[in-house]
Image (cartoon, rainbow, N blue to C red; front, top):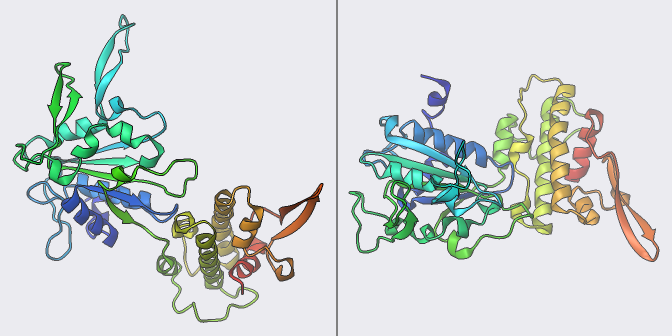
Length: 372
């Protein structure tokens, strides 16, 4: 048994929940702030699917003891795509594209898109397809799906036996084998798992009519995951020393500061813009030296500060508030502080100090951010 197979002997709770949603709804949209584990969960579900974690009818299902039932992995196949600004209908369904090769100048060929290939596989008896769409909100999703947008709904698919029923939704496609425009419907055993990053301010909100065709599954920043990772027991109530006495002191300060930053970001920008726990989960052992612990966490906090700067881009005061550096009278231990400047008659703010967290400044800085 290889490492990947062993990994899914005991699927995570999140993976089991998403498999249940896929079985019932066919389409699931995974979302959450950056760093909460969307990519990890996506990989876990895709690998579990490819390894044959399916029921006898080719559907994701769980047995009575919540272990994912196993069948021949050859019955299932995972298809992947990433949406971006230049994603087109022909890349996803079918369409004409310039032919490539010697002597083919000015010629066109019919290409099979990712959804079409996944659907064709799932149309075969006993076969199932999982279509993974990463960064779905970065592309023009409605245009890319085209007529398939309605046809992806669970009750609009073909019946399990491959035959249409009264609710089956057909849409037109250019069939690659013939070049003809024909009516096409999606098979019952095609499952779509999409992922979006709602914190990306560079993309437009997705179409509501499109979103309602997906069952939402959201991952949230999880303090308990951090505490378990750092092996902290009962740390919330204890008073942290001014100077760390053990690596768990540094970890506890990091957790409290992270919680405080997310609380402020939630108020200032919304829950979608929090930073996930995965950013602050380096390889860890309670046997680490204090210096090593601070060095490891300093790298993560560089990312946290960069995330806050992006979330509040152009709003220096809000960035300072999120990092608890807005009040110069409270400046104690943090390498950052908010200062005021005048530009003509205008009042301008600047966040001064080292933009990175050094090993020596980390612990006092975390206590300052947490308001300790």
